[in-house]
Amino acid sequence: MKLTLFKNKLLFLIPIGLFLATWEIAGCIANTQLFPPFSKVIVEFGVLLTNGILLKSLGASFIRVVIGYILGCLMGLLVGIIMGVNKVIEYSLRPIISILFPIPTLGWLPLLMLWIGINETLPITLIFICAFFPVAYNTLTGIKEVKAEYIKAARTLGASYWYILWHVIMPIASPNIFTGLRLEAGMVWKTVIAAEMFAIPNGIGSLLMNAESLIRVDVIMVCLVLLSFMSSTFEHIFLWIENKVSGDWR
Amino acid sequence: MISLKNITTSHCLNDVTLDIQDGEFIVVLGFTGAGKSTLLNVIAGLTEYKGNVLFNQKDVNLIPTEKRNVGYLFQEVYLFPHLNTFENIAFGLRARGYCNDLINDKVKEVLSLLHISHLSKRYPKNLSGGEKQRIGLARSIIMEPKILLLDEPLSSLDAATSKSIRKELKELQKRLNLTILYVTHNLVEARKLADRIVVLVNGQIRQLGTVQDIFSKQIEDTQDYSFVNLSNKVYDLDYKLFNKNI
Image (tube, rainbow over all chains, first blue to last red; front, side):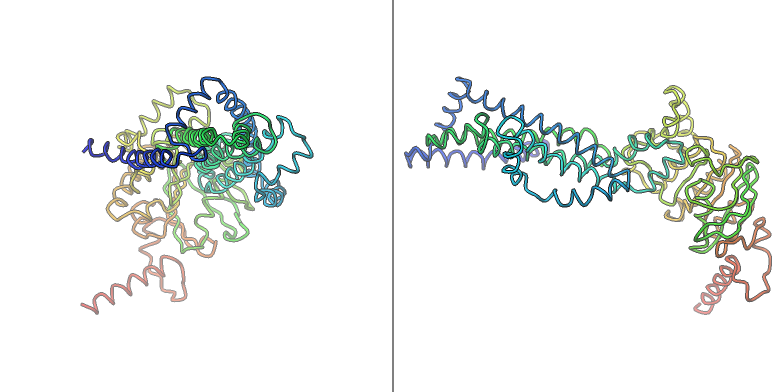
């Protein structure tokens, strides 16, 4: 039984193997710089890793993502909580958030380039915006979905306002909050790449643009695979935390 | 003693006055919308009202719910989904800052009293309706409340579980000398549990007395639409139809 389960879990390796094999064969047959085989991409990955270009670019993007994401999440959580527990603030801020939330993050780029200029603050601000709205919205939704009876029950048990907020409302709202955090953890990587491609001279996005101008498809592919890996890893980290926090009771 | 003096609320209750003695089990009967749950909410301080609520002659009108020390078990128990049984029961003690050793001792004692020690690590999603009610009860009585307010706690349970919990509740009330206000529209529960019965009709107390007073009294007045009279008529009608069909 356990062996069968193990085999089933490994099934995903078959399509991946087939995909990579097809890529390799097609790349060899095509024999062009525009479609390098898988093995050439791996070799290029090794080269970029050894000469430090990849780590330098990844490090620059990573720092921007972490700073922008943490600031955006913290502010989103704060605004979401305040709106969730205070009706006056909720009704005051909801129209503004409803107007700004649907604007695609990259839609802010031209405006921010004029306001902030092309410097480190630009991608961080974009990532902040990318994380802020969904996290604020999901936090607000999560808090609003907590049934009033849980709060009443907690009050009759002698719990204060703050105790109820931290020990009843936030834990019950946490699955919704984590959904926002997790989805945006992946999305911020897409945003930082876009910002770097347009405006910033270093980072993975910038490396991609340089590779495009030099017609280095192998480097572009390395960057794309790395981007996919980072985005997915960030999402999975939050999925893991989410399961640790609420997996037992959800 | 808990006293309600001329309690009026905006939608339901109309000049309700009631004294509840310590250790008394009062059942509140009435149709849907009669104001039964509102009466409990008034005592708990969960709704606005006019009039006075007194705990041992002390006016508690200005005291918020969290400081009134009432136990409240809702129709659906609303156990906190993120806490296991032990932590659900310990919630009130933790909220009031009790030390861990005392919490452990008290929770274990209550778990044992209600025969639910084996459930201590389970989360609400893995509990049956009857188990949830027992845990809800444990969570309420661990705080040693001045009054325990029970809002149709057995209405969603099957007959056998309901009977079993009813029996345990009565034993518990006698053993711990609990003061209980129990809302239901089930006449069997009222007969089995009550020391006194309050019949609420349209937000007013229509009848108040012992089980014997309420159920054995022959009500001659055909215009009497009180709950027990109407219910007796319904039961009588059911009985006649049943006999006729046979």
